[in-house]
Image 1 (cartoon, helix red, strand yellow):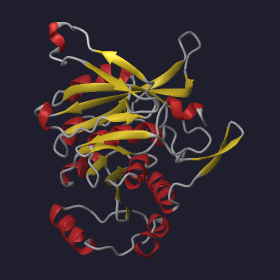
Image 2 (cartoon, helix red, strand yellow):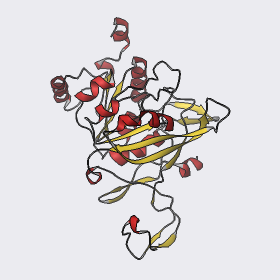
Image 3 (tube, helix red, strand yellow):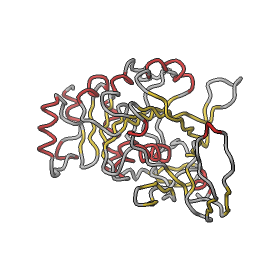
Image 4 (cartoon, helix red, strand yellow):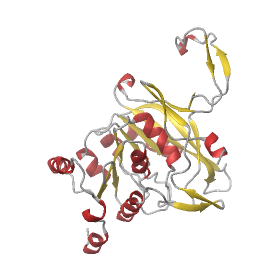
Amino acid sequence: MTDQATQDAPTDADHRPAVAGQVERSVSRQLAGLPQPYYEDEAVTLYHGDALALLPLLPKADAVVTDPPYGETSLDWDVWPDGWPDVAALVAPQVWCFGSTRMFLDKGHQFRAWKLAQDVVWEKHNGSNNANDRFRRLHELALHFYRGEWGDVFKAPQFTNDATARTVRRKARPAHWGDIGAGAYASEDGGPKLMGSVIYARSCHGYAVNETQKPEDIVAPLLQYSVPPGGLVVDCFAGSGTTGAVARKTGRRAILIEKREAQCRAIVERLRQGDLLTANVGGEARLAAHRPSQTTTATPQGVASTDKLGRASEARN
């Protein structure tokens, strides 16, 4: 790091307050060969460096949730880091990876250490396209990969509180669907409903601190699905720091890695402000954190309220 960069970088006094266990964490990092964090608080640790070099040194995590460079634009940093999925397999048993269909078709062989569990579609309120002779792209993908046995993977299905009151009678299903039980079940207006795999969330245009910033409303359900409260998530291409912001708000811990120092500074500023970044989007002052939500998460004790996500919430905004 240059003298100027060192001068500009946030200092311990600026944003690394003393917290319980900080000495223990420092010793653990030294033993693992990790550098000093660029930023650290009780929930989020940010490293400035190369993901391929730092990932093998990290402690075991519950999941990786990340948005890697797709390698599809002319931006100088938009270069796919060859081999990162294999290295991520050393850190966590599951990965949520954002990407385009083209990216996954081109780089799919690099996920050979993983099994595909499911895919989620982020439906944007506005899209982009580099050509006027194709359909306008209004979505991106998030693919969920896992290792080992599916039954051993932590998962907390996400729900929305927008069910319609009705009674559903179970019918015979094809044999390959398995035994679904007999009888009927009833739902109530406003009751929980399993979240669909197409999630609507407004893009971050107008207040993004990174060119490809993902909104919290699309990151939150993936993180809450795969990381238990108090658990650890890793984002090896942190970008704008959304994974860290969501982890802190939902009672999880996060380790972020970002190669560009300018983005590290932006992440620190975002976290120091508590993500209360305002912007004028569509003539309306909005919070980057978006509105509160009615989404729920299944837990062993029942259904507990968490953050709101999805089209129903946006329609009321």
